[in-house]
Structures are given as structure tokens and as C-alpha cells.
Image: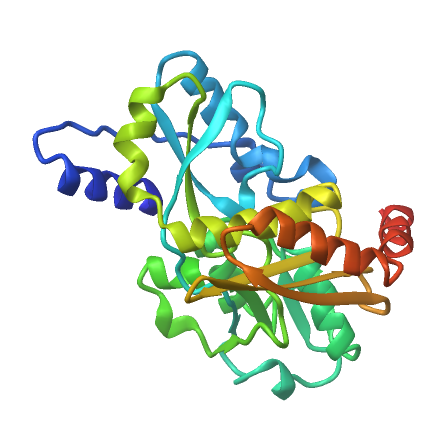
Length: 294
């Protein structure tokens, strides 16, 4: 809802004489909280109801956290704009401990992400990692009740909701590479709505859009699912892009990582190059092991 309000405010600033109404909806991803996303359908659970609303003429566009958007959109839908990225890092949240390094052996860490699970397990095999679902308030409440010693969340969500004070430490990409699209918002429309595409175009942030295209190209190569621990993070500086990527087994015991650099104007090519570099490190076998574990 914060994201929808943010886009509404941005549009009213661009078009002060327009009317922008918000149609609040609850998706399957919001409702199923007792199982991990990787076991109940993955990213598409957060967008399907919104796409149906657009098809039925109830809504003109949908605002998504880009990391929740499947790599392959259904036929008839496109992303019209990608907004400037917020902090893409993971956040360490705890009431007792200052960082992952400070947690004692056996401490329980909560996360909804196989990617985070793999990266934590690789660095801190002495910790116990357990699933954590629900909206931000629900997750923080579970921490406050003592169900977890710490939880790992996206820094962007905490900052957007004015909860920066709950962040004990942001985990740098060198320790926890972000998910494809993490920290970015996207606006989805029906592909035949050229009128909306033109209206929304000023909201598109070119550097962010190119970065996430590279990240999503890599993710698409590996199936684009939250059922595998995969990370991809691109940064753009003066027309050049740096793309880092990782794929792992959930226990963090097998990891392939790679980095490529090149022109930011060719994000798909860079995404394909880093995918090839991962394949050369036996990424196929790592993914096969993930499927066996599932």
C-alpha cells in the first residue's frame, strides 16, 4: 500500500489535475503464511489477483516490488516503468544482537528467502535458520515475542515504512548479495495500453531499469524462481555496469559466483555473460541439487 501511495503521489505531482484512486487488494502471497513461498507457488502469488483486476477493467495498472514479479510476465502484460531503487541491501534486525557475527551458536535466524538462507548458512553454519512469513508488522512481532534471535529483511521495506530504527545493521552486498530487483518498484500494465505507457514513462529511472533488466535476464536463464537460492545485483556508474551474481544450494555448501562489467546500455548481454560464467562453475549441478532437496 505504501508503494501504491508513493506512485499515486508521484503521478499527482506530474499531473495535478488528474484523479488517481487506489484499489486495495489482498493476494494469495499475503494470505498463505504457514509455508515458504518456494513451496506454494513462488513469486506469482503476489501479482495474479492484480493482473486479473486489470484484465477485468477494475484497475489500470499495478505497483509491485520488482523482486516479487515473475521473470516471465503473462501474455498481454508489460512493465511500463521501474522507479528509482531504494537501498537494495538486506537488513539485520534484532533486539539483542548487533550483527550476524554477534549471534551465539544455535541462535535462531528467521528469513523467508532461500537466497538469504544459503548465504547465512555458508558464513555461519552454527546458526539455526527457520522460515519467516507474513507482512512486516507480523515478522517484527514474531521477533519481539522471542521466536527468533534475529531476522533478515529487505532494508528498503523498513526504510519506506519509517522503521529504519529497527535496523541494527545493513549487510553489505559482499556478504549478502541482493535478490534480482530488490529495492526497486515496477508498474505493470496491459500491453495494449499505449496511453498509460506514455503517462507513466516519466516515472521510469533509466539506471535502475537497466540494472534490473540485467539481473532479471540472469534470473530468467536459471528459471526465474524463488525455489533456488539465486542472487544478482547490478550497479551503474557513468554509463558502465557492474553485475555480480551467485547461485547456491540452500545449505550454502556449494556456491558459484561471478562478476562481469560492461556498457550499461547492454543489460541483457551482461546478464547472459554472467549466467555463462556461473554455468562454467557447475551451476547446473548446483541447481539440480536444489531440486533434489525440494
